[in-house]
Image (tube, rainbow, N blue to C red; front, side, top):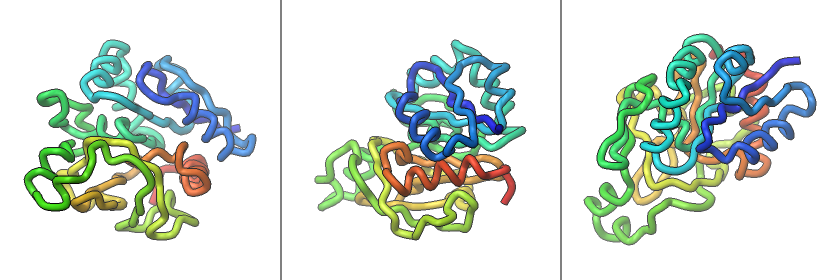
Length: 217
């Protein structure tokens, strides 16, 4: 039986993610919630969830030594980042006055409030955080989009979004006053800003696709 580790660093909605993965696995994959380095590296696939402020997430990852573990995972097996877990893969975030992230992928994390205020008009009146169902449009083919139609709605809760340093990293976009990247992909890495575990059938399909993915394109 294959295995997937859900990284536990005290900052993610771990129960919801694990339960959704178990439903998607149909008994074919063992789901392990853990913060232990050896256990994580012993799994076939790894999920990095995250909620809350990026500064707190990064502080806990570093305190627990999981930042180096995630770098090892990123170099060796399929890794799925979810929400703040996606943002953590970038170089820096504007949140909390500026926060250094894991620097695995080139890019920055921007705040909606500042960008929407700069646009003005209707955009400036949108509420932040961006919360609720929104359409996701894949910008490239990828195994994780198998069986998911372009424009499918996924559930979002976030005040910050990723701005990839290389446009080719973008795997999907959505729109909230401005178009933004809501999924990135590079080799064996895939990450999404939305919450698959809150996105009903489409979210379960994406998790099932991840559990079947060997990290190749």
